[in-house]
Figure 1 (cartoon, one colour):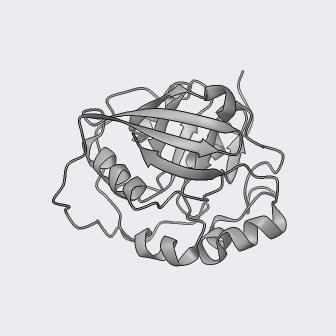
Figure 2 (cartoon, rainbow, N blue to C red):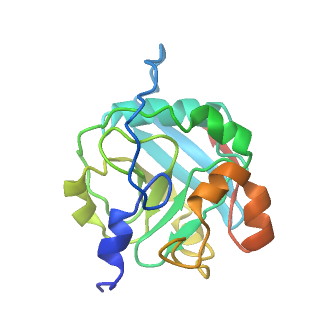
Length: 209
């Protein structure tokens, strides 16, 4: 089924709403390399979700995600943008002080080698070389995103039923809708979300297995 808001929503898979991105600041090259294949376990408010990451699908993104999870970045993070028939987006830290440490660590793009089909994990982006910490899980066949540079790096191998049940009642985020404003999440973290959007599902802990 086509959704009338799809084109606009796809264009706004952005790091901070739908504003124009600032010039990219690439992350420093790290000395480690993630395993060729590894699993990330998200202990969510709706149950466990296991995601298998394939480094050869998107090596730069995989290394960065491995580092983020090892540092506990996603612990407590909300699924702040859940659009049925499209995707579930997350990746702004619970604590704004943690977000500030990572938000400008932008990484170069990976070539798109896989398709954005159901269950695939992909970085959100606001343009070339703008990936930082935000990701989304595809809840439908969004392969039309492939040509826009959205490079999947992993796939949900268990717990997709939990993903499909994440709370979506707040709809699209501000300014396009009445849902959470990404810039306010960035500056205020979970204090803002708990006060205004208490039904959002969340990640209790994210670990590498």
